[in-house]
Length: 84
Image 1 (cartoon, rainbow, N blue to C red):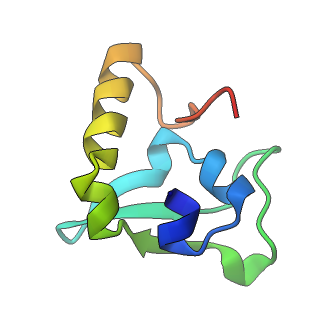
Image 2: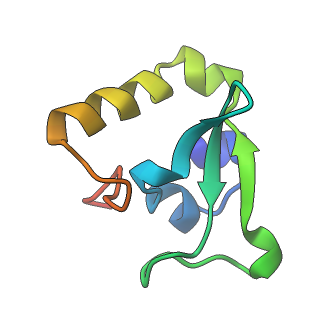
């Protein structure tokens, strides 16, 4: 769903870290970047901040990330989907 609503490649969507999900200027956003050995982007221009689509928010993505982060006491560098 993340890839569908952002245009991101599957690898970029499944390797999001908690620090890649944040709020900027009252917009909830995803940061696609290559800041870890397993995270790869197509090219340098692929690094970008993208607002989270309303439908993803309505489906509870933001709340899911916040709940999991709190429950697991996750750090920003921890992966949201570690088994992917």
